[in-house]
Length: 291
Ligand code: R1P
Ligand code: URA
Image (cartoon, rainbow, N blue to C red):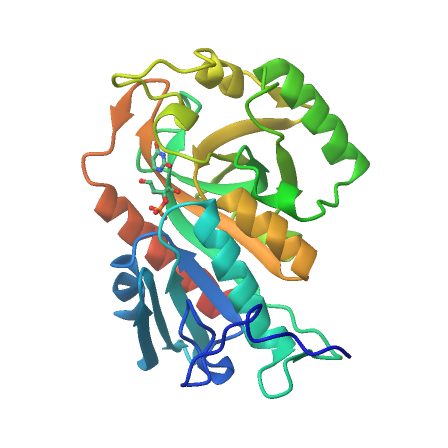
């Protein structure tokens, strides 16, 4: 088995992977990712005990137990570029031996669940409601640097999407399904549908302040796209990258989002923090009872 060089996998003096500053034993088998570093403590305040607290740049990690089960909560910061770092380093922690720098002969799978905020693309999905992503559809290009693996149905959905949304020249989209073993626990109290991931918050989500956008119809076309029983429910900035890299690396991934903006009825939540708090409590109850 070949040794991975120091320049490719960076391990610091603490024996921890570079950006996340985590050692293998500091990670639980289930990892929650959140965008906002301050959201990590909003989770861990419900832990029985917190055994690990680390921070390097925007990557804050708390590992502890809740209901007697071990859980890691980690902030990714904003955007799919950060997710490239998070997913590769999480995978290295469980699937690369840091002593020998070789890939482990038996690969390990993590549960990786994003708990975030998002904008609704449907009038019937109001602010302060929750969405569980059946799929992550990426407009962000990250997975095109790897080798996407799509099912025939996903390839057909993407072809239909590119034509309908008029994506030519803007992005080469990719799509990955959520892990069914996780998604089945997030039905009651959740809308379900395709979560679109964008490489920005303004132009890439059709927000016009002072700059014009290349595709002024983007929001309308995302809203009225359908493929069989699938429709687009919401968009944000991380899910497709988590799902795409997670699937290629063999992890089980899910994303649940609190809706803080509704782009169709043009509303913003009056108390997005309270909605996120309710989502955290609901996730932790489900984790304690089902994971
Ligand atoms: C934009 O405001 C950020 O909020 C959403 C987007 O995906 C993006 O990261 O998620 P988080 O609340 O998890 O950061
Ligand atoms: N996060 C996003 O990326 N977009 C929104 O509209 C709300 C939260």
